[in-house]
Image (cartoon, rainbow, N blue to C red):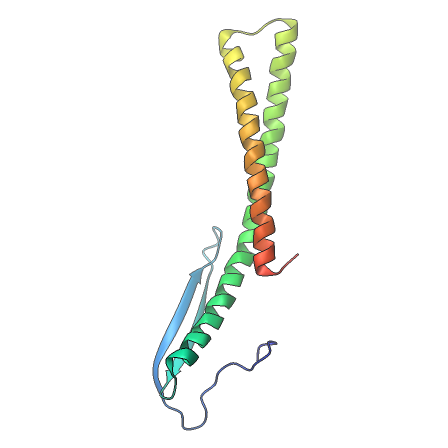
Length: 142
């Protein structure tokens, strides 16, 4: 039994199942994990009761999908931070060379592009941090 407010819907003795349903979600990441929830449609179900049950299951599945997405988002952020570190090191080397011996035309172009690239990576890191915050809020974790 779930630790939620209500017990899950269970057929009363003698209640007849007239159909069934399965909700499936592909969870985030390369793990290939998915989540399935199955239930029955009973003879006495009205549309409101069935929709309420399906909505509850979908909400649970969506929360689990979001929870699985958080580590993926965090890993992507870490990868971008490492890329940013490397780009800053290359930029520093190029700036040092520019001060001491001068740069070739290709190196000047690389210097210009590196500055733009660093700005874009910083912007993507900010977007990633916001996505992590939103996912945590939606999933009710951390």
